[in-house]
Image 1 (cartoon, rainbow, N blue to C red):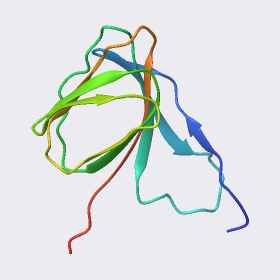
Image 2: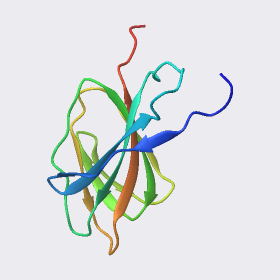
Image 3: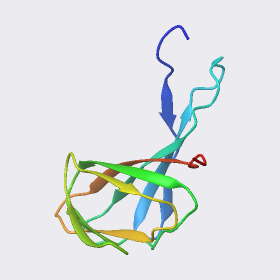
Length: 114
């Protein structure tokens, strides 16, 4: 590897309660795809995402805004700088409780058997 590989964000896709931009490596590079996928999503003030549950593990990195996550573990208030980990098959959704957009970076991957 000769240096960093640029990552782009695709066009925003509207989903119930949020806008999602999926990450990808810039085409034409010689690097193999990373062992994870990622996105940036925004939840407008007062909106709630659809419940999400999946076979992959996921980490959220909160860039801006405030919100409340509801999951099987209960309720968690989140804000800038927070990071959350979701094991596979843990249902979760988020409500923007602030006055500005809630912006989160999400990374997910298929856990390897141990």
